[in-house]
Length: 143
Image (cartoon, rainbow, N blue to C red; front, side, top):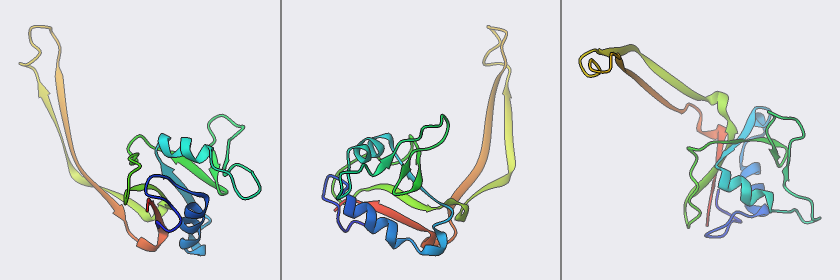
């Protein structure tokens, strides 16, 4: 959803459009997921009555809320605020599945660390993830 956002900034209207593009049956389990840069920009946004959109949590360990939904921060979320870039997602992440293959490998590297009397290990695991129901998610995009 990019309606309401500018080419380089998120807006109150843009966040409301993202909120209401998510179907109501998924609101109960919805969370925002975004970068620290997104959170910093949201902390400066205010609604039409001058009230901040981001409600800071008073309890340690509890997430802040944006438009009444928990805001989760990830270092892996996109943080490039340029035209046509995705900057956040709102959705019910119980419909985002992670699948691990059954074959996991661990390789012991005795020779590589023999001089220092250490043992090195390399682990390999095949894993993948994806949304299993597209309508459970609304991505915030810049204009």
